[in-house]
Length: 158
Image (cartoon, rainbow, N blue to C red; front, side, top):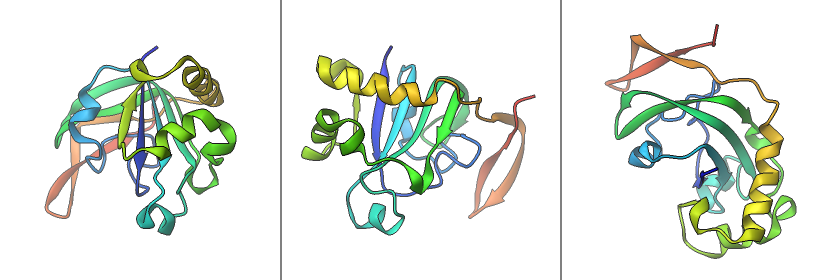
């Protein structure tokens, strides 16, 4: 399983329904091939102001690529779990992996470059979303105006 992990600085992307790319975050990175995404809070001032710093924020398993939006495709997931500000501190959940993520100035990484120990910890993190419901799906037809940009409307999966 190929896994994308990235540090985020603010909430809102993915949106409440699990539409990753709603605010065009991570741009072209969303176009890469992977089987799961783990979003963790950065440790800077902006992440601290949103109370997501150093925490597990969200997990998406089984990405479904939608239409291109901004710099990359919109993604929804077969399994999506959003922890918001209630996420567990990454250092207590996966200490070796947390040292890698926060010990360097990286913005994202792929599982291809992880050690066996880091991969075991990441698999444990993914297990927290195994029974989660699917995220929304993106409507290819309807849009609404937001800050002079078209933004997709996402609907619940039927």
